[in-house]
Every structure is written in C-alpha cells, then in structure tokens.
Picture 1 (tube, one colour):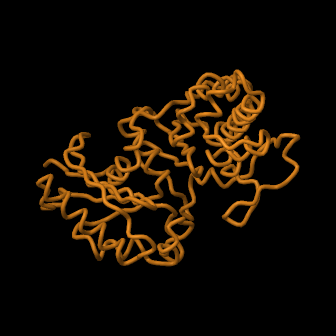
Picture 2: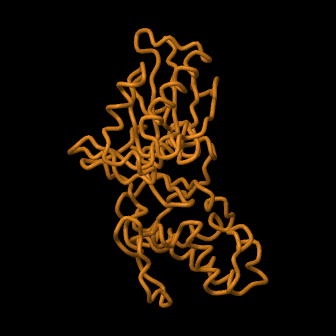
Picture 3: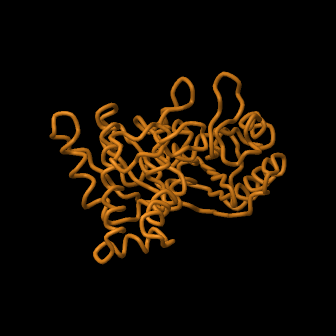
Length: 305
C-alpha cells in the first residue's frame, strides 16, 4: 500500500499544501491565509487538503492518506488549546481538535520549527542521523529536536523552544536588556533573528540596511564587520549550549539568516572548540530543502504510516 502524505504549512500570510509520495512532491498549492479569521483558516485548510487529495489521487482508504499541519505556536498539553502563535487568532482555541473535525482525514499538528527539523532529518541534510537539532534563523528564531525520525515535543509540548532561552555570554556592549514579545528579556530571538541583526547595525551606523547588504559590506564597513562578528559569537555560544546539553549527531540551520555563507566557515570552529572538553565534532549543516522544509516536515509527521 502506497501512503500519500499530505503536508500543510500554515503561515501568517500564506498556507501551502503538498502531497508527498515516496519522498517526491506530486501535488502542491498555495493560498492566502485569511487574516485574523480562525474559522476561515480552518475552512481554508480543509478545502486545500481536499483539493490536494484529489490532485494526487489520494482516496484515504485503509488509512493510506495522512495529513500533518505545521503551525506557529504549539498545543498546551494540559488544556488542548493552542498558544504562543504569532497568528494570534489561533491562541486559546482547540485548533488541533477543530482541524480534525474539519478535515476528512486524521490530522497531526506540530510547531513549524519541529517540522523543519523533521524534514531535514527524514530526507534532507541530516538524513541518517540519530539525533537532529533543527534551527530556524529568520524573522524569528526557533528550534526542533528529532529522535530517529520522530519529533520530540516533551511533556509540555515545549521541546526545542531554543529561541526563547536567554542569551549566554552577553557582549560588554549589551548593557540594555532587549524585551521579547514572550514577556521575558534577552531571548535568543532578540539577538539572532534577521530583524535583530539589522536593528543592531542601524543603531551602530545610523543607516538602515538589509541583512544581505550588511553581510556584503563586512570588508569595507567596520560597523558591518563588528555586527556580523558578534552574531557569529552569539550563535556559536548558543549552539554550544545545545551540544553540551543534547549532543546531537547533527545541527541543521534554516531560515533567511542561515543563507549567510560565513556561518559555515566560522561558527563550527567556535562551537567545536568551546563545547565541553574542547573536541566536539558536531556537523553544522545548511538545509537541503530550503523553503519547502516546513511543508515537507508536516507531511512526515506520521512516521508510522
């Protein structure tokens, strides 16, 4: 029996769905996310799944069709309600249960960073590795942990929430705390995200530049050079905490910030030298599936299918 895995990536502005068969995408569709509309989001996902199932020839007979949905935020295991989503209309709602009522196939959900990690562990840059830590460095910062092809969410559903741990080894310049939307200060997201790097450069130089422009000017611009150097240091120190605590077989980076080539030249050496014992060899890898990792990972949320 051939399993059709339908994956859905729910974003703030678009919802993407694919049908994955034998690791190959055989159908894909993207639609706009209904802004701030909870019931509209449920209906849109249900309709999208139906169309993808039809386009791929999936019948759902004998459990041969599965659906996974990657979401911002996660389910509170104590209440079954969604939380921590920047798509705020989902928060405080029984989103996973309502999806299962709206979609004609059984649905599993997971945080979008977990889906990224799962995608890269299943058939991406970290395929074949026992323990994989996936990192999202983009507009926000997140992480996900995968053990032998299964997402580790933890007892509270908070496994891998790396973006909201505190920054280790603060720079001497970091005298003012950086508030985070989560209610705490100095979370990694406030230092390692694209907007955080751009804001730090603007404060130092008086100019607003994109991350790509900053990275391209490091040889000629002392402010750019200092900002990118501090970013490398912060990322390395933050990944050392992962290596010392989890000791994954591979770390995979995704998100727009992960496209900086300098990361892969500088950061692994720093991490390996600073991990406990000074001799770690954890590979730090660029993602293989790019923007498709999230939706592919959602499709892989049923490892036993």
